[in-house]
Each structure stands twice: as structure tokens, then as C-alpha cells.
Image (tube, rainbow, N blue to C red; front, side):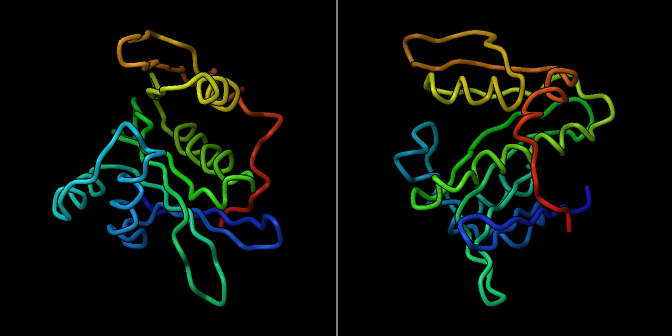
Length: 176
């Protein structure tokens, strides 16, 4: 799949989301996976992280200033780009969470899966009620199962639900 980019301004600052595989530093991904906010994951070796990223659609979220792209977030989808997408590892640095960038990042994911010709399911797992409500609203997700002993909820949506979700908060970003 060809790389995609989205740009927007929030709080007077420029931001970029990119799926280009060579722009999101592996070190940033490892730090994100070791952040307590990403309680479901832990980083691995550089080689394993590179393999993980090479086999995923990873969206890097960057602050753009003076031509420099500073990574501040990410989302990763394990996908075949045709029928299935599993959303995981959604993360935004804490100091940027109040800018609506997480919602924007998910709307970029939504655009990618809407372009999949035969999407059957978009899936994810989450561990809290706030995230559950967010993904219901933004992606049309429904709870498919729970694992109370691990505080995990599996969620999924078919293409029609994804296409109608988040309409009120659709991306105001322009595609580059």
C-alpha cells in the first residue's frame, strides 16, 4: 500500500499523520510500548520491533515545526489491506492528548479501512469503559466478548458501521 499522509493544525501547532514505514523511529515505538499507558504491551528487541512494524500498517503522529517531524503518537493495524484490520497500540504522548489528536488518528485509521475493498471486520481489544465508548462512537464498534479476569473487551465492526461512525467528528484534515 502506498504511504498516506494527513495534516492539520491544532492549538496553533502543525501536525502530520503518516503511514510511511521509514519515518516513525523504532526507538519511539519501543518507548511508547513501555509507557504505563500502553498497559497491554511491552517493547521487544529492535529487530523484533522492526519486524512488527514491517508487517503492520503503522500510523505515526508527528508535531511539525521548522521542517522537523517529532513523533508524538502512533496507531498500528495488523491487516491484509483487503478483508481484516486489527487495531492495536494506539498511543499519544500525554502532553498532546487534549488537542483531539487521538480522535484524528483514529479517523485516519477509519479512512484506511474504508478503502479496503472487501473489509469484513475491523477488530480491537480495550481495557476500559471510556475507550469502549470512544471506539463505539468513532468506529461503530460493538462489544463481541469480554474477559473479566483480564479486564479486556473485544470489539468489532463491519464496514457499514465504520462508514457511518464518527460522521459528526469527521476529519477536517487535508490529505497531502
